[in-house]
Length: 262
Image (cartoon, rainbow, N blue to C red; front, side, top):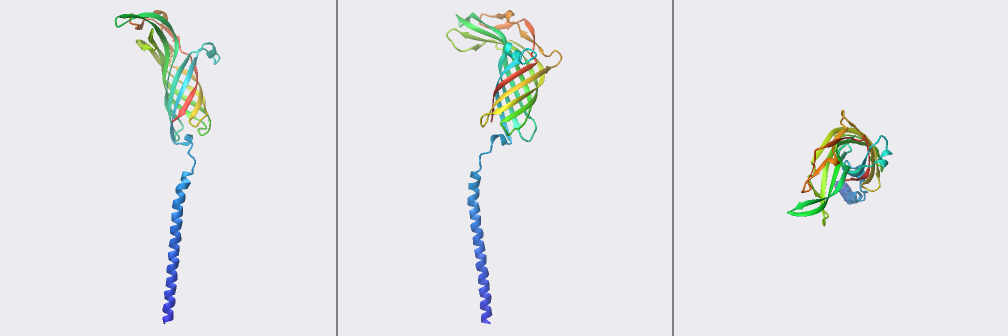
């Protein structure tokens, strides 16, 4: 009887020892996993910015409308300006939405005038410019978004027109003071499409090129521009215009610039 009790006690003791050993090994494995997992995550390479779900695109561009019916005419009659593009990108959708603002001089003159400044007559230079401006909403579809070579197509619509601006620089000063900043403004609705390319040359930086064609409602491509020969300059340098001339807006535009992903 004593032998049976001893055998049962011995067997029970062995089971307890095996259970304790199993628990010990499980704890060791758990501790080892907890130590290695953070190290593995820290060693993962930084996620490429282009692979993020959402990012913003900001572009600064030199623009030129093509006065004629072909691209070569931009070299003969250039009219350069600047444009700012902002777009919000979401990889869940096909299109990216944003806006585009720009302006470019389309004619004007500089003249020396005498103005009265706090009762004192002073000489200055007046810079008068007709400006072509636009404000467009964009929808863009970009191909190969995870590569450094990204063609895109876009549609846009908004307003495009002209305004008259003047700046006065008094002798002995460097600042151009605005004078009657917008004494004349004329704009029409327009829309169009464009095709372009983004070339990546840095982690977040792209060189962009774009060619666009514009359309208008009936006679919407004709705007009123202040006639430089009929501009009246006041004693204080203020500028006014009562005479305008019709100008047909060019149907095409080209641009090159720099874009940054934020």
